[in-house]
Image 1 (tube, one colour):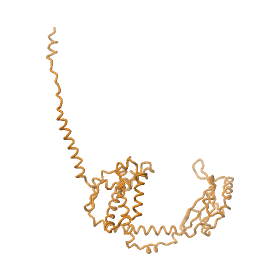
Image 2 (image 1 turned 180 degrees about the vertical axis):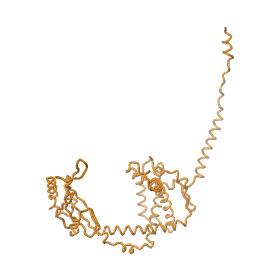
Image 3 (image 1 turned 90 degrees about the vertical axis):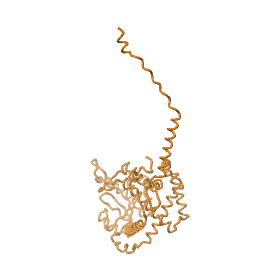
Length: 362
């Protein structure tokens, strides 16, 4: 009866006992791992690839981090205004390049230009002035004490000395750039002569205004009732005598005034949104004169002519045209200067960087 039981139970197997690993083995393994770690760190330090080379000089990411930060912070401020959507907006519809891609390219090109122009400045014995040194000190202190987050400072290892060096280079490069532009053959007078002042004749005005319109249930602008229009007329009329006898129109309205508004504005001879009849009235006004109350489709106006022959728009047009010519001339000269340098951008490293997250902390 018990044979089966005996057969099934079989002989007892001996229990295996684990032998403890010799402490010497742990020591040897730890030593090997330590050597490997040190070797990896040494390899990273000795054979780390530069992001940019200019002649014999090598620039690693940490050498360029302030250039990147300066631009990254500007773009990031815009990104916050767009609710975090700006970085990945399409910058170029043809190529699909995003703002992030374009900003990274701009950052590396700015770094390259700054370093090249700095080298050119130093070759011509440029030195920081006492005033520039004071400005740089103030800027560095402001960055470290106010503008930069502690995490950003730590991430980029920003120091007073490092920031002074970067901002000093930017300062000298910018001064050299300005001096270079001033030396280029840009014909300012010829450019000015090619712009007709008549195309930019401008009238500078200031006015008091009260609306005679309101928004209806369909969100459409409609005229007030005759009674409400009369009330609006009476309201702006109450300021008329004061306006005629006050130099500073911005001080005319009471602090609690909600209906009448004060605005500074201008219009060009070549065109404006003001009604033609209203334009004709204003064009006939002498400087300092005050119009009668004028009724337009949208409300009542009292206008004072500030300058019936303002040169601001013409001057801006001339300045813009000269700036464009200077930029073109500088671009050509910079390309010539750059061609005298042996430079290289490591695109492999660049492709691993995400603008917006290089120097900033999210």
